[in-house]
Image: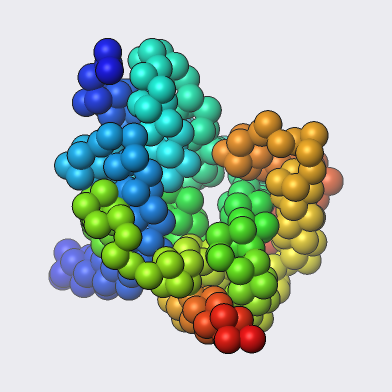
Length: 104
Length: 249
């Protein structure tokens, strides 16, 4: 190996930190432009939704378990369960589904 | 007097941050654990895995970085690949920049910027009104050790946790995402429709052969630009509407 692992790690960490901190520190004024404001308003929902599906189905050993977790998670969040409850419920659903599927 | 009130408020915010950071730490531990197994495979020590996770807090970014270490890639390549795999944080930070009150001292932007992850971003952007950085610190202080120690133990003890447990824990983060995006969708029809479109588009992007060469980080960026951009063009938010739905959760 010709390269130093610690230099690799510093490059990774440095680049990642700059990506995160530059927008935060450079954009300090409230943005007035309506399109940009709307765009930034939609960004969180779009990014999180894109990252959730189909990743949740691919994350589990059994795709069905992930799918059930997705459905139950949506229902629970819809009726007002909080972050922790939805999160733990999804884990439990996957655990039980995969347990049951092993005995069928 | 007002100082005391602020202190009390900060304490409350910190506690809420810790509370919301718990499920994140749980999910992080599981994800980082599998990342640690990968770190071990490319020859990193447990300490190096721990350090990588403390410096990066980024699953896809670290994963990509480890593959480059394994390939003994040049340093510039490491910089470019890290930039590309983590570029979605650039978008998130832009959105988060608007969440800070103009009165918040600059130092907080440097500190919160250390940990703009998918999850920390998700919970901080969902806070009502301006973000109190103390809330973010509460969450970060619980979440980061979960992430870093998960990596550490992944290297040390790759196969101790049974596969069923790892599989179950791996959806904790997605459950959290749902808890963030679904409640606003109840109040805002545009957001609800967007989520359905995102699921469909993301599914096509992930499964269709023609997009096979695109990494999941790049997929997130492309779809975010397209879908959020389209929504902003056709359904620009009104001032009041933004206040209502962005800050409820």
